[in-house]
Amino acid sequence: MIQYSYLIPLFPLLGFLINGLGWNKIPKSLAGVIGSSSIIASFVVSLAVFVEVLSPSFQGPFVQHYFDFIQSGTLYIPFAFQIDALSASFLLIITGIGFLIHVYSTSYMHDDEGMVKYFAYLNLFIFSMLLLVMGANYIIMFIGWEGVGLCSYLLIGFWFKNHAYTDAAKKAFVMNRIGDLGFLVGMLLVLYHFHTLSYQELFDTIQSSADQTNIYTAIAICFFIGAMGKSAQIPLYTWLPDAMAGPTPVSALIHAATMVTAGIYMIARSSVLYNLAPIALDLITWIGLATALLAASIAIKQNDIKKVLAYSTVSQLGFMFVAIGMGAYTTAVFHVITHAFFKALLFLGSGSVIHAMGGEQDIRFMGGLGKKMPLTKITFLIGCLAIAGIPGFAGFFSKDEILAHAYAHQPLLFVALLMGALMTAFYMFRLYFLTFTGSFRGTEQQAHHLHESPKAMTLPLMVLALFSIISGYIGLPKVISEKHWLHDFLSTAVTEKELHELSHATEWMLMGVSVGLVVVMIALAYKATQKAQFSAAKGLGKVLEHKWYVDELYQAIILTPLNHLGIFLQQIIEKSGIDALVNNIGSSIQWLSTRVRLLQSGIVGSYIFVMVLGIILLLSIGFLSTIL
Image (cartoon, rainbow, N blue to C red; front, side):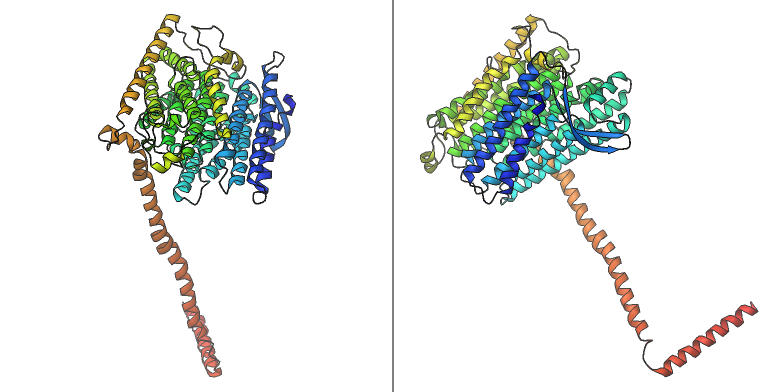
């Protein structure tokens, strides 16, 4: 079946073409069927491919060349797909969660007039992400990388009549382009020094000549800049919370299964390179840590249900990058997998709440929704337990693995990450308690409108809730099992660094400390939400509510100076300089031509007079030249 892997991206591409070309003719209900069917077809093929990769008979990566993409002199870049353990894992996540989000969207977007276009964009989004994951070289990855960026722009600004939403879409597009420039420069460095962009050829060359540390570091940092844009790390993270402008299922798709995981995938795919660039890994570790803590602190004081989840995503991505910086690439991928399930669950759960609240997103006007929405409440609670790291749920296993590696790497790093994990537990349960418990704080009209969401929305929630529990068992800690299934599975595709091992006693101690403190934070969140008094924030609370004033800082030091520079260039350089020069040249020629035109008076006597003057002038010049 693996030789038919080209069908995986082909089905979403066909769905995009059908819905995209027939957007004004296809009924909305049919568009949902076409969009969802194309993704489930991809999922079935992905599952078959995954089973084949899982079998003992599968030997190494399967690379399929389809045609010559770029050929110039000695440069040869084929259009090729590579299937191995890493890509097969991501294919399942993208198509599986993508399908659930498509099904959810059939109900959530049912009344939207642009539903057909919405599903066309959604299919194109999945196609681009699949291309990114399946490419056998960086060029194919980059095509998918840019496609994902384009689709995010289209979907974040889907309700384009709202100027704030289009501004958010443009912000995402521009900030991603900044990161993409770094990725592009990295590819050019690879091409210049190694004359190839194919993974296998590049990594074989790197392993055989491991002494060019400076080159590897430069390339690794350039690639990481690309990852900073896509995966929202400091300083290129502010676009992701603003991406909440798009429909809620889009938020789930961006934050869980596709776009933000692209940076993690790219670095995990390039693990051979990063192992030879320790400076780049250290940089990734500390930027990831700073991002995790900054975003977690901001989420504590946010009141928009989707903004809390958005900053939560930024924080969790920071955790993943810390794992990468320590060389624990499998651990980072493990957290990508578990996070994909519980974050998709939380976003779709928030969509269910927003749907019931008639579009209201402020948790200060919610409360007591669990009575009217029991399924949404239970599934949302499972998501909160998973992201908080409660034992038995998926997030516990992946986050505990990151914390254990951090303690072995540097105890101070463990303490800082533990603070991030505790803040996560606090803000997620603050969100849960304010939304689903207590008394309702909204309007009477909203109270009458409250109801559980349709089955098309609740069924994906239940499936995601199930996987938010069981997906963690693919990576049991060594104190429970010596066999780490995911680590063994990915070992053929990802080259991990040598990591320090902890004793079982130490690991039990770390687990006990982290879980105990998480429970304390949940209790504090419960206590803090029982009063439900929302007075104006002061001091540090005000700073957190305004997101550390980072957007204002960017506005002051980047946007405002650029705007002033633009005005100066337009008014002084363009209008008073370039335009004035061009206009003056034109007016001067026009003035001169009007004067010269007077010579052509039509009077013969004037012509004879001028001719005589000319003869006298020529004779004078000749006479003077003989004398001199």
